[in-house]
Amino acid sequence: MEEKKVITVEIAELKIATDRLFRHLEEKGLKKVELSEDFYWQIPQKQLYDMRHEPASFTVGQLYDDLNEIRKTLDGKHNPISYQFVWLASILRAIGEKGIFSIIRGRGKPCACPTGRPQGFAPTF
Image (cartoon, rainbow, N blue to C red; front, side, top):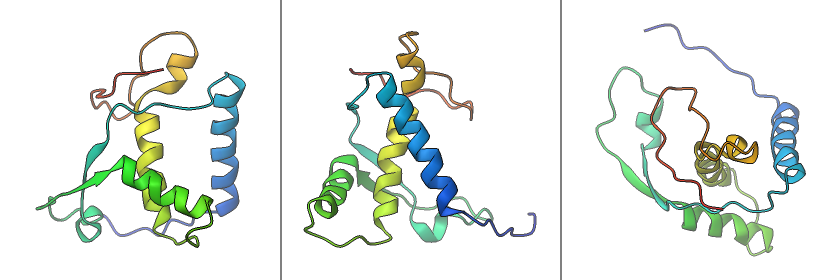
């Protein structure tokens, strides 16, 4: 196992990257994304980054609940908390796994996943 590396994440870089991705979708006329999946497997945080051991347990997450928690902040019902990044990440991952950019380009099917894992989402627009 290689030595742990510290990764410095610049907030400004993330803001620029997400803005460009969302701007691209909007320029292509996409205003919303329908996700056909709701529940997903989630690895508990203590096991997620431990490469010495294979995860021994999983929990279930739900995109519907994740989105509702984010909407509560948008509506002013809750103050922002750092865990909302976890909820947002699950939604963004589901969107990314749909291969939206290939669909927008008119290919009609999701783009290949760079990790080589099979595509599990059927596009619904």
